[in-house]
Amino acid sequence: MMRRVVWIVLVALWAVGCTPRPEGAVVADTPRGGWEPHEEVAIIYDNTDTLSLYNVGVALRVESSRVEGPVSLKVECESPLGSRFESSVVLRAEGVHSGGSFTEIKAPWVEKALFGESGEYLFILTPEQELKGVWMAAITIEK
Image (cartoon, rainbow, N blue to C red; front, side, top):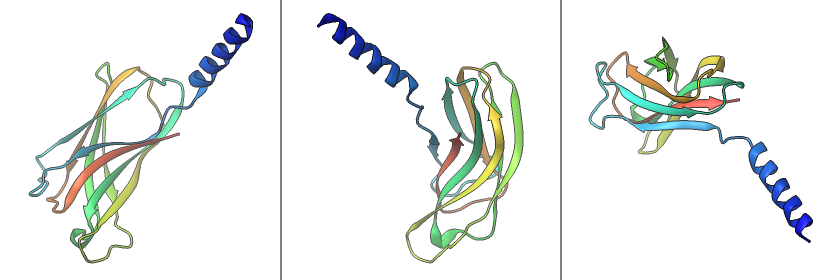
């Protein structure tokens, strides 16, 4: 009987250890009155997987009636040991409609990224023009 219990516990631990870590988005609120080019939004991603490759993107949740034209953001990433990478990304709204509902706009940023260090990666998002109606900004991370 004891052997069976040990076997069940080992199988359960193996199953939990092999379960993939949830992927998706790390989200932060943006300034409510308007998001100015000098205002940064910081997002922290806690990494434990130093071997897998990820596609990293940017997403915004915006008021559908206030999205006009493409949105350009400066995205900066700082690793736990201080290495930095920075570039711009342009997000384009698709299927925008009037009203008070929200739209999520997304754009890829870096494909096949390797988070080679364990710990907290700091992402800083800064708009390159004044933005109104942006409620949240996110970094998307997918295998």
